[in-house]
Image 1 (cartoon, rainbow, N blue to C red):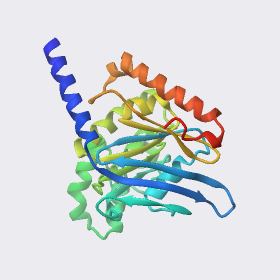
Image 2: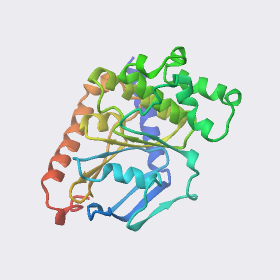
Image 3: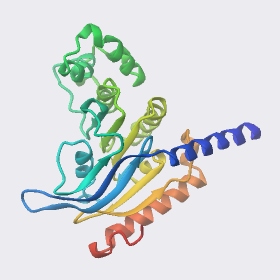
Image 4: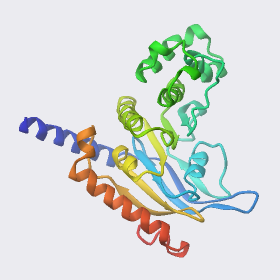
Length: 280
């Protein structure tokens, strides 16, 4: 068992080193975003996302986490600054977006809700069937394909939302507090499932959360943001390999990384905007 554990640690270290060597996929450079009502959401925000990263954006309400996601997804544009894509701006189907609410069509079955993005692309039901079956199988909902949203739990609805992104086979998955409204047990289970999907499909994930504990469990990198206006306060590398399981949640490594992230978040909430970035 000791030898097996040593091999696993070596494998995890190799995977972590491989991620470190990957090229930046998208880089935000000196991004500013001011809304029409004069609210400054982001001020001089810069960070990069590497290919294959699981990067979490953590910070209090009002720090522009969701705005940053919308900029990356091209749902909105920066007031100033630049978003650089290595290899060119991705096509619309290359970016999946999972919102905080599942936003399912109540009159449609799980299968039909999952089919929606393919339908909008003009793919027939017959041609979409294999992709939908694969997506629903991956989120453990295939046997509920004919069920309606009213028959599903909150966690199952969120699985449908993930399947709806998965069916497009995206390269980048943007997730805006998708598990915030769920109970802790369901949230933990979906965290585990999400990591498995990330590793299976080699996605790049950018994940917004208020939870330090969730960010440390999921991420290889965390960007802590300060509020009013939103700025990058600190970037943290999570010193742990993958896969991660329930044993990791009670490990000294997890505890130590949670402390680092928690201290950074507390400092980000207290510090004046003139000092944001001083700890980078």
